[in-house]
Image 1 (cartoon, rainbow, N blue to C red):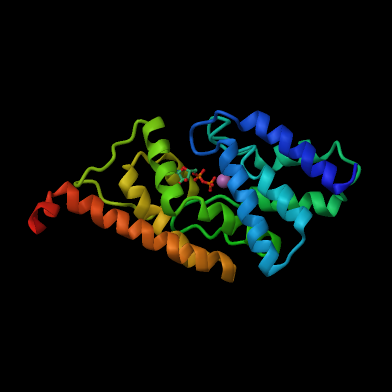
Image 2 (image 1 turned 180 degrees about the vertical axis):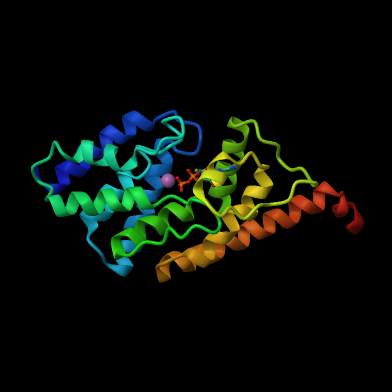
Length: 221
Ligand code: ADP
Ligand code: NI
């Protein structure tokens, strides 16, 4: 199978597996990350095959699908092993990207070291910001039975993945614990430019949220 066919087969498999998932890891999330990765790649370069495969496979073994156990690396390798057209080096690179991609807490360093990794990670991070990120955060919070906001509960800057993963904070705190921190961690110039706009929108949203919370918008009547 050539690379185009491998990407086609992978797309079909991922779409089938992820359709209907409702914790923010549905097929359309992967589709947006794939698309955004290609947009960044067109400007910043990098190996398009590696980038596309990593974008497509990045959430297939997520710990949220496997009772908290991360199976990203093995799921990606399991899928790729059937194709003779991918070298071992490529497989390892793609699996490395998938494994290291996820946000694991405010104080955990998960930055990538290859251009392909930086691009897919930036694309994944962009989908957690802006209008899309807000929608995903509340969808995730609802699914997990989280409160929208509780003024007495303050955001926590998680120092390790365990505490981040097990936290039961409010969805508004998730903005402070993750979403607003992403801008500083963007690794490509193109990703950062888009992140700037999307972060601005997050801040505008939060400002309005707090204003409405206290009925401050009545003040300007
Ligand atoms: P990724 O795997 O893309 O790094 P996550 O698995 O951490 O991202 O999260 C998937 C989506 O759900 C993201 O949009 C993220 O911001 C959101 N999310 C994750 N944890 C929470 C949470 N505790 N509260 C609200 N939204 C969350
Ligand atoms: Ni993702």
